[in-house]
Length: 439
Ligand SMILES: [Zn+2]
Image (cartoon, rainbow, N blue to C red; front, side):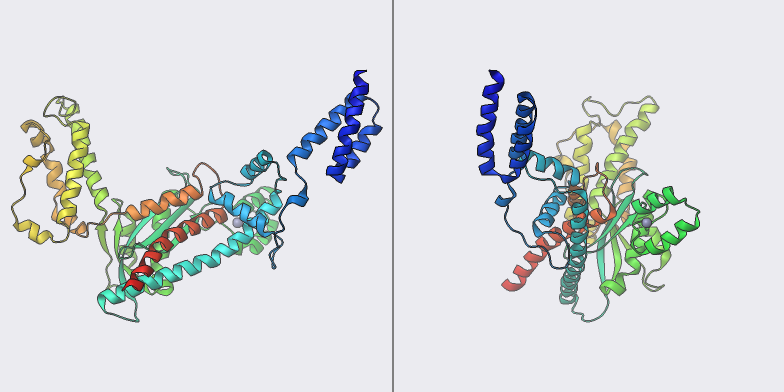
């Protein structure tokens, strides 16, 4: 009896299905030919769930294919959306399954990725070109010069995909201080997936490999050999060397973090000849950080000698006192930055405003840290009162596009960098355009 009622249900259901989707017809008729009802039911359930998972393709909107490529505009948009949120093919597959559509195969995905990459590369040229023009215009207006190579102050910093010495990618970014626009960048990569596979399959020293490499060389992702730490310095060298040719600019002053390696390397290269020396400015946030580090080191130093100047005791150097002193030091630099000569002749303001108590014993011990940090040469380099916040901010946007925990190819990383720069610069650029229209 049970099996009979099942088969009637099957027949009814199959009618509905027939009306709904002719594709299912074949499956049901095959199942009707099957021997017993249990199997039929199983098959039908599977078919039904299939039907729910993959809706009829006739409901899809028609999206035109791009003329010069084989990928649909809709597919490209979908891939772009996933890249924007820092996800790849695996996530797209899961997403398709959850909302019940056919998942895009890997081949199509990489085809779309390649197409998007080509588009992004021409977009890159456009955004950098426009940004450089804006920077040039602002400098020419400010310094009343025109049509020559301009000298500008830039903020330069490197960022890595991974901390430590193991990162495969490093990026160096140059930001003009006056306008806050990114004018150039360089990505260094220690890895090429194609080369790794070819080395494994053909043998690194084989003749086949060298023949293959000759044809591959042009599109090879690997453009750096050496330690990941030195990537920042190497990228700076490339960027500084092409600054006149690509941008018509000399980066004569560099705002950098405490790390002096890049600056020393650039100075030793004499990129702009013997007559033009590159100057160094300090990021005041990084300088202020040095006070905190100095104070913490003092606590450790005296602890080793058996004297406690840290801890919670009144008048001692508590952690929140260190934070307060650091902020106060940064504020002092920033407030007096425009004219330090004037500040030098003035009487310093009373410190009673700071409601932080420190005992005489502690003050005496931390004095050397302050003496070191009020060094004229150091404060001179802070006179612009600038920070590297712009660099930090673009870094975070880049790594949001390409999350650090996911492995990405150089192509994908570059796309992430270009969209980050586009968003970053066009925000600034729009406001500049409005400013120009208003004036
Ligand atoms: Zn390669």
